[in-house]
Length: 204
Image (cartoon, rainbow, N blue to C red; front, side):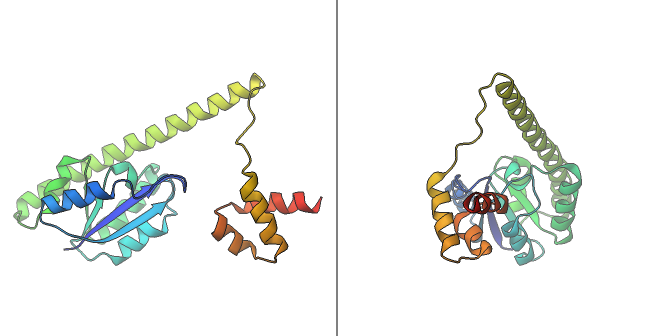
């Protein structure tokens, strides 16, 4: 049984490794070692998470997927959450979350079959509940954000996100230097739509 830690933050500006110490301490208290750590800066509302799926592909049956909170694993809608659950269950991976005490017993190899099956059933139910709450929180925050933007626009106060002039200047220099779009996107983290807008602006 290997323990694999998954650490996620939503944006590149956030520190995905913030909870690493808590996961290490949790494992140490139970005499376990974390075999590998997977860090990712992607939205929990999307299934497009390469590091999460690399972790799943590295797992063997009985391995533990260790997370700080269930929302680090999922803020997915119902259909995508079911796809991810099917992937996890199909690989016989145990999900253990620090904010889900019902899952802690799964970090032990000493439980008998009946206890393990009961813990698994309870844990699956709790995972579903917390994942649904995490998705609702995500939807509520987005709705409040959109309402705030709409109100600011009505009042003439909305100016949008400030432009990152230093980054955009560097992107333009890379374009002039003949760098490919893929290289620029990888190096700067900008979106292709932003890159297209800058190219259009430079050509004007």
